Image 1 (tube, rainbow, N blue to C red):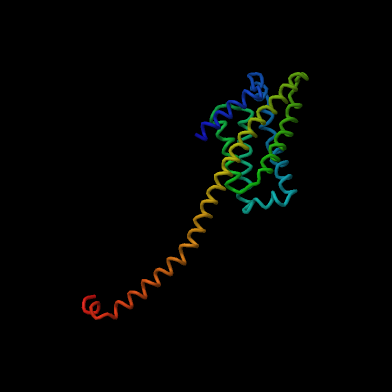
Image 2: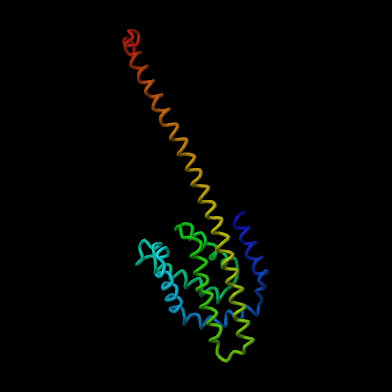
Length: 210
């Protein structure tokens, strides 16, 4: 049901932002430029991360986690320009939101990362060779439209995953409270049984027929 709801959100947002065939063509025209500028994007991304202790401390094993995150970022950005804009595209964006919750990454870092990508992609629009001002405008508009859709998908599943995590923790908390109450009662009951068994053992009838 949740997955179906997210698919509805994706289709709705594509219509809401007005992503049309002209936008898709503009994004594809940016694809070659994006491939040659990915290193610059990663440099900007990690520069911003390193400026803030809260962001840096997310990486408990930087040598492993940073390259892995970089690979995910590159894959996300590459498909943003190349498409296709189908349900698989939507699921990959939704998974970003879930992964942020899984690794306890604050939502603000996801939004901030989107701003870095948005600025970088907008600059690419002005590097289109021999482009008329109208073409550049269309490219900037297309970038903003598709990144708006991406952000909605990420935030939507982040919220869902965070709520599910809180519900699980709440259930575990209730189990802990119940267990804390059951343990003393169980211990007292076992103690009573032990005393009763010892008392019964002293009776002649029990001793004769254990």
